[in-house]
Image (cartoon, rainbow, N blue to C red):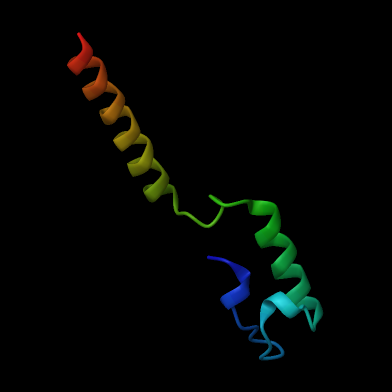
Length: 63
């Protein structure tokens, strides 16, 4: 999830504005996590499994 749509529970302002220290801390944490930081481990495992299956299918097709 991107922080541009989050609303802070502390000050009720958009987190992207960083009005309070809670907003700023959460915004920093989201920026450090990167684009895949918000995904759950289950989703990451499913994505890796799909990637492995696609590579195996592609290898089978070319053989």
